[in-house]
Length: 239
Ligand SMILES: Nc1ncnc2c1ncn2[C@@H]1O[C@H](COP(=O)(O)OP(=O)(O)OP(=O)(O)O)[C@@H](O)[C@H]1O
Image (cartoon, helix red, strand yellow):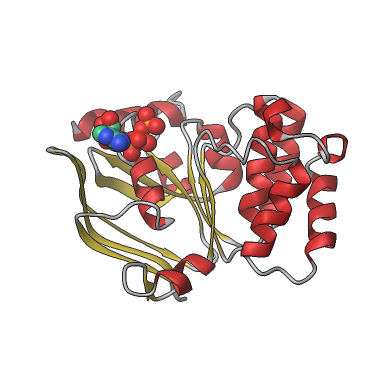
């Protein structure tokens, strides 16, 4: 199977602070992977580099074989990115936000696609409202719709269920599970990782410390040990 995401030797400095320290991993097309790690491990930095919004100091990122620094257009056209605390354009309505990204992404059946997303994310009553007037959860739904409107081959999701109520979380999990996209999901919540993904990449201090299948991770659990405790133990051992 082809690698959809290739990350090799990534180094990222913020000033003199090294946030990524030779990060390397590969994700095959079709895989659903959780990016886990403690606060400050470098998850958001990694996703922003993969989305082409941040440049690393060193290292290579290839998206579907396209080097993001040499062929950014080809690489980025395959990506949908939901940033953490995403804020759509506040002064545009929900529909205008979706039309804006839809036009940028050159979507043919844009009207039907927008109507479908308003349906599945239960956003019809806010269609003509400006995003500034929406609750944080509804803004998150709009941001998610903007990330998936072009049915991207590769979806990068940073804490996708933040701010969503429980019925909406269920709706969004079903929606994401119905998509064929390769997925890399950063989350602190193990139950979300378990429901959306079946592989784990665990990072601390900008390096991979463990990777493998969800079942493999569960096998590391001692008697009466929860999966969260296993992750905490692996992180503790790496420090
Ligand atoms: N713009 C910035 N300037 C300076 N330091 C930064 C900047 N952005 C991130 N950092 C630092 O880089 C490190 C990695 O940050 P990052 O946001 O990628 O971590 P994270 O794993 O997503 O954390 P969290 O789980 O808390 O969201 C942290 O120590 C953070 O303080």
